[in-house]
Length: 173
Image (cartoon, rainbow, N blue to C red; front, side):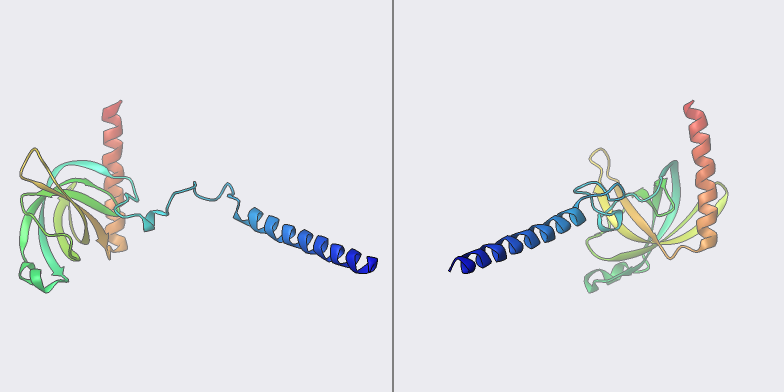
């Protein structure tokens, strides 16, 4: 009888040790490392409307904007509609522009932007990402993300944005 009690106690102790070992390994694997993002943060690709690259403010550059595609039948009449917008800032991933034209961006909208930046012409396609109505004016401010930007256009845009940022930094000094 004493052997049975000792055997049961030994089994319980071994089971407890194994369970603790497994739990400690799991806890160590879940512990954050220096390479992990801060707690509670979400990768930029999972956050809506996150600026993923440096934006350079520009002095309201006029742009011709054409609505290429709207996914909803309700707004299909807006396809190929063009209007004027004024670019406020730009990056390699997108831009912000204002316009008096109010677009319903709750729908999936693809646009084409035609503008000149530092004497170079650009025609870029973008997806409407956000919209903000200005209280102080009748203009609406939009944020767009570029889609299918060619490597040549990306390099030209990067070069111009770099030059514009250098000029802004010199003016700030």
